[in-house]
Image (cartoon, rainbow, N blue to C red; front, side, top):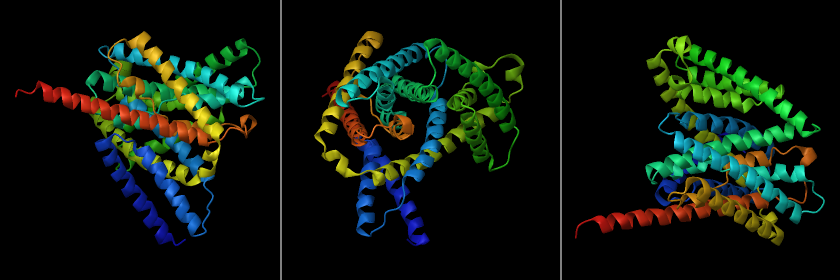
Length: 402
């Protein structure tokens, strides 16, 4: 393929993705679905011309960068304050219990469908299906009321962060014997990583406020990715470093005190935060675009011909929403429509599914299940948002004088 044709293709995909975002805002149909279908269409086109490039390495690299950008974007979106504490703790509880409950129930379901699979491999397969996609939810809930919108942003963000940490803790410590050893390693890893993250994040923010060069933002992104990769090599909870940095940059007035706060320049940090957030959003858009398109290209439609996949996917969806209804009824107890239907699976689910170590890979578990759950949960969310918008428009129309 000509280099110029390749560049043209990349540019066209970005333009189409931007158009998909506009369509998504107007129709509430997630752009993720459109990007995956675009990738599937491109696969057929490439097959027609006899081109079969290797996709997995590209998907893996995009996945690593995408993971970092999602956690960073989510951390920058989390604004901590005393007034928001009720929303924060309720959304955190629902995200945590939903992750635990869904993972356990889905692992049991997987063991029912696939013979001779152990509990731990089944649990590792279950976690990607138990994590909501903040990348889909955050841009989709703009038309909800303030409380519902903020609740969904916090819940999806917590779900991403907790799910990723839970997954990597399991796969990196699966060989430990006994609950005591697991608890010791977990607590030691957590304390060490948080301490390291606080020091490195504060130093990075301190340095950032004094650098005025125009190319500084991608310099700092490179430093963050470097810290993530190095921490990963030392088996630390590397995503905590990204999380702590994002929280510190956006909430330094709440999280710091005394001399630590006085050494920071408020005007410089506030401007830095806005610019850094914009760069993060733009970079995340590019990474998400190519990730979902490459995922669509790499996906084989033949896996959807097996009836067992449809049965397992349907049962998975049922479990996810039953647990969600129970938790919202028990914890929030307010107007829970349409929140109970807003639980799409997306980029994080794909990333973690393909990050399952080889020793846990089960050949009988088809990737088609993942695609069906992503599609079904996105369609359910789109339908719920469309109905909610029509209801709001109807209520407004009824309130107008004749």
